[in-house]
Image 1 (cartoon, helix red, strand yellow):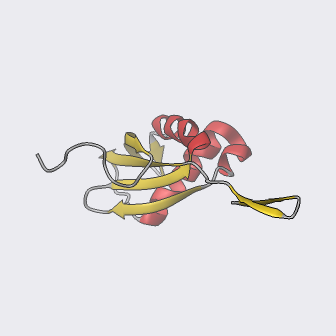
Image 2 (cartoon, one colour):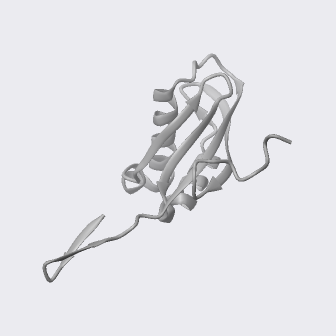
Length: 116
């Protein structure tokens, strides 16, 4: 982000967080796609925080259909809101499921040692 003050440009770094989210389905035949994940996140944020929650910006960076995991980029100030909203959404379009935030990180790379 760039701001001008007295004719001089100042660059402000946006602080972002990356959330790794897992979807586990209890029952129901909903085929989970990137679009469905985006709709679910919008429904979760709007359901919990109203119209203001629906305006919280985020990006879907990655979605694995087989693993049912997504990586979401959001502003650091919105991280707690997104985490809370995802935990309260338990059904969508007649399918029951659980959305779980597995990890929050300042970068896309996982912080744990996945290679053993």
